[in-house]
Image (tube, rainbow, N blue to C red):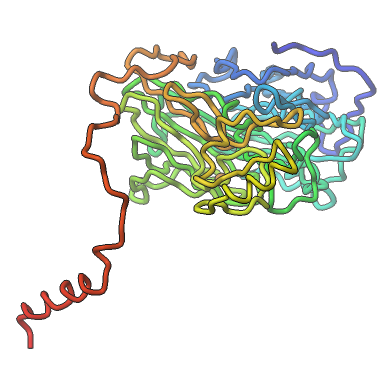
Length: 456
Ligand SMILES: [Cu+2]
């Protein structure tokens, strides 16, 4: 549940650019410790807009003070449930990683108090925003770091509509590897020629962690070999499904703060990229696609009409990014017949077992003991068995009867009779052979067209 935690401790407002108004009492920080998807935050004041939803996340409430939207972020250690049974000790904002989504309207004057409860200094960079240079948040360049226990204030006008992120620009490698990041959405103040009204609007931050099986704290020195690939610091099956009504115009906003790119792929529909980190894209630059690569530091807005009912897979297309903690050192065993060697080894080690002779799919259902606080490598129960996925994977659920504004899970799709792939009766099939590729057969195929050539 969301709660208001009394703000304790000496909060010294210490930025040089603070106005008299900002020196007044700070807004109480709102804390959210649940990893459930919070319903969209309908704006209680200020200008109206159709609010976004952050799957397994939430949107930061604000207070209006003298026509300024005031937010209070608290940088602090948090405990994040990444999927049921797996918790990570991260750093984040207001009880969570990622921090709450900040949602404002083009032209809003925004004041953000940032209190540092971390053991080292921090800062926040407002990724993609037009703002005064001294508000850009780069420690050492634009401001001193916010020391532990202190509060700084940032203030600027949200000048252009679009999709943005926030993250520290102080000991970045550590602080981002620990989960410090959040989403920012600026809605257009009036109907914009390049921004459609949508029925569903989702925000996903791509992040990645290296947490050794059985432990809970990320290894911050990891550069490439992460083992938990997450959306909003959640891994499948812990990522909520994206539930929409058939015919809805859906907008997906993705931001990438990992160390590699992620080709995001949606089944059953084509989308267009309607916006980038630079703003809405010109209509002439849009083309239909089913996968879009999102590079490090980029944001992309994808839009489509959800007109195909069903449960559609929706995931990063790097196959290692749809798996959970695993040993990448496992050798490939496909096609290796271990029966003889296993018989001999089990004489010495009775529980010995071989992995991957016929592929790795068995791993999804294997009742193998895992260290505490570790997700199975490939998992997730679907209506037909294990989904054999992990990491950056979710399901787009399109239903004719999902009510407007209702983001709750409708359960599994009920397929109309005769629309599911199924086994057919066949005469016993001979195993695949290389007959057609024998030298004689190849000779015949090569000679035939040669005789029929018209030229020469
Ligand atoms: Cu990926």
